[in-house]
Amino acid sequence: MAELRGSAFKLGAFVLAGITVLVVGLYLLGSKRDLFSRTMDVQARFNEVSGLRVGNNVRYVGIDVGTVERITILSDTMVLVDMMIRLDAAEHIRSNAIARIASDGLMGNKLVNIEPGDGNGAPLKEDMELTTGAGLDTDAMLRSLGRSNDNVVVITEE
Image 1 (spheres, rainbow, N blue to C red):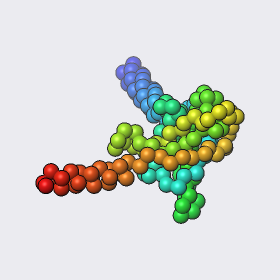
Image 2 (cartoon, rainbow, N blue to C red):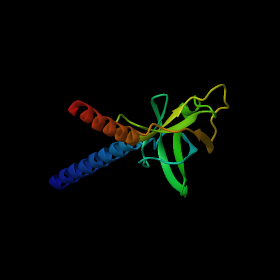
Image 3 (cartoon, one colour):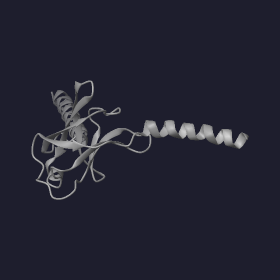
């Protein structure tokens, strides 16, 4: 009987440890995507999102402040991007801020970069739509660099 009680205790401890590891793992994964922080939804309309995906970062002046929650195609020339912005960061963002599609490094993941607007704007509110600006097109830069390289080859051959 004592041996059965010891086995039950070991089994219970093993199951408890497994559940603890699972809960801690879920919490750590959730904190990466801001699942456990208070957020507000903000939208922006873009002509092109250049490979932006759900779950990519949203940055304000270089600091990660949220994630892309949803991307909806509105028409052949318009895409709506829904973003979750942490409330502690949203209090610093004004309604006149400008959202642009940017790249995390030269060839990195796409992200939404929010820049401060000119002058004083009202504080950011839930479901507000930010104005957008043209982002840096790295594909166009690389095409231009390819043409420049071809020209350099021609010049050096002559």
